[in-house]
Length: 149
Image (cartoon, rainbow, N blue to C red; front, side, top):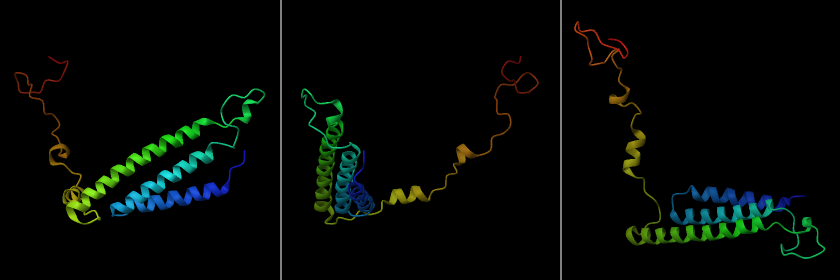
């Protein structure tokens, strides 16, 4: 089986452009990036599906190798539906954002900035613990460990 290099190059370009657009700060570009990613993945599935063949309907006299594999086609149809649903959801988010703020660009969240600037040291969890902190002591004031009497 030989792979069509043109499909692979187009797939790479679609995926690269999609990833670039998803990393942008405007919701419209994120939407376009998601759409390009969906189309790139669909083309990748189509390319990996193998060579063309006869429709997968039974015909007497045809060898099994002559049929095309229906699984990549089913996966592509499922991916199209999922991409359409995500696109509709993002369009609704973009419309809602536009009606509320009249802006398409996402602003930095102040709480996210505060969390990212906090140190990882927690006084309660990371402070040194005394060697023996048991509250169970014997008559002489020595700590009693488990299994001792």
